[in-house]
Amino acid sequence: MRIPLIAGNWKMNKTVTEAVDFITQVTDKLPAPNEIETAIAAPAILLKSMMDANTGDRLQIAAENCYYENEGAYTGETSPMALKDMGLHYVIIGHSERRRYFNETDDIINRKVHAVFDNKMIPILCCDETMGRRESGEDIHWVVSQVTAALKGVSPEEAEHLIIAYEPSWAIGSGKSASADQAEDGCYLIRQTVADIYSDEIANQVRVLYGGSVNPENVSGIMNKDNIDGVLAGGASLDEKTFLQLVQYKK
Ligand SMILES: O=C[C@H](O)COP(=O)(O)O
Image 1 (cartoon, rainbow, N blue to C red):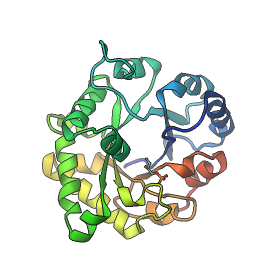
Image 2: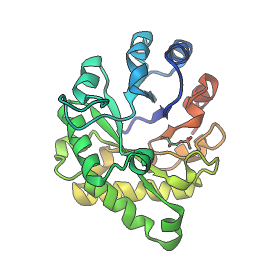
Image 3: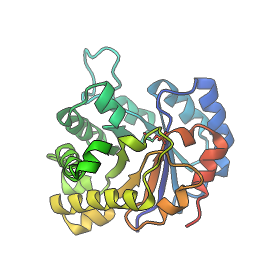
Image 4: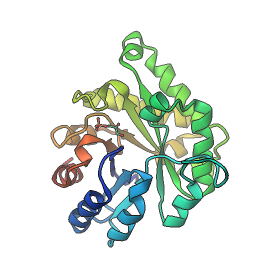
């Protein structure tokens, strides 16, 4: 059985004080992690304070990115080995904003996926599509090719722990979520791609999330779909009350 995962991605928002405040307010209001898992991904500069404030076992603190080397002369980068040492389990890799603004290629994303697995953490691998590609029918190939490239050389034993997020660029931060059916189509396609690369068994273990303008009003409809195991929410995860509303979605 795949445990639902409600994850927030704060992007480049919040100060240390604001982050600690948020964690202190939500930590004892979250469900048991064997019912619904919850996570907040935050900028590297906030993570240690968030880990210290996160006294319970109900919330996972995650990183939004890391480099593909553990150490060396890479000024300004975040070491996956240091993230592991801090006690993190999840790292977002390949978010569309990393691909678009920081020129992350499929090859870089593949190296980062390996670096996360090598450090015994789990990547939340993001793949996107554009409205142009969706309208022309090209989006299918685009999503398949991003997932395939990111998983090159990843073993079946690693792949079964994967989390993959389907995030159409046109739905991110636009207030225009994909419909629940569109989200299900994208997540189904990702699961099929994993089945083609590995097996049905592994595809059934991988958790697939939808991200793009998720909010308390649309979360239930999205979570009701067979191939959607969770959400990756940006804007709606910044406010404590709204994040808790996402977590309390009703099937
Ligand atoms: O990682 C999260 C996504 O980019 C979605 O962001 P959003 O919920 O603000 O549209």
